[in-house]
Length: 301
Image 1: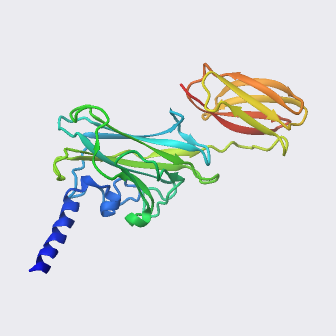
Image 2: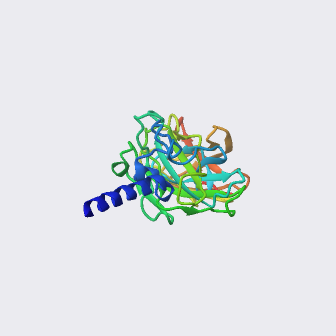
């Protein structure tokens, strides 16, 4: 009798996890890839789990110092923001989510592998890092560990669900990456009925690789501060060959924002007015005799 009771208890416990899967992230709870980065059909919206529904809209964004960017500088720290919105009249006061970043090559297939490093410590409340060993997925994810209260609204139309997770960009030569994510807006009834799961359109982020970059001098250094900047950017050029230099600032779309000619005698300080620049990432180029150095800077609102 005791064995039967124990067996029943174990089965009941398993069923509780399976049928109230909104209470724990799908990757750790059931090895489910809600993001679709692996191309699997084993998502949060499959039969027997939550309902796949377009009534929850989901978008992804990569931020640098609060500014949305479409490219990454290798090794730099960024923030991934995932936002869901309830467009239905159903009351969905809480949510769960899952996100990952993978190399563009292999993205959306079983060959998908992580690109860069997702934040694993100091995460927001009810959020956990799930390594691939703990989920049996081919990559690491960040997901909910318990139902999260909606960010704004009481659950009805217009209610939003937002999380921001840190990400360190991969090394030089990785190439473009894709961010995948999903949100499951739930009615918090300890069941899977009436919930609204949806995945975001993957966000492709390009690697910023300045072309034809050759050091003007092996010992030359260029520092930009403050970086990110608001109204004024200061450059400090040290250990440079004496001579005339061309300084250019251009956007990620290759549009030239500013041009200046400077004379450097070993060291030189340069100030640039950035008040009229649109928020975003820019490249500052210092060139002499066809050779140049390029560094990235970020303009904040």
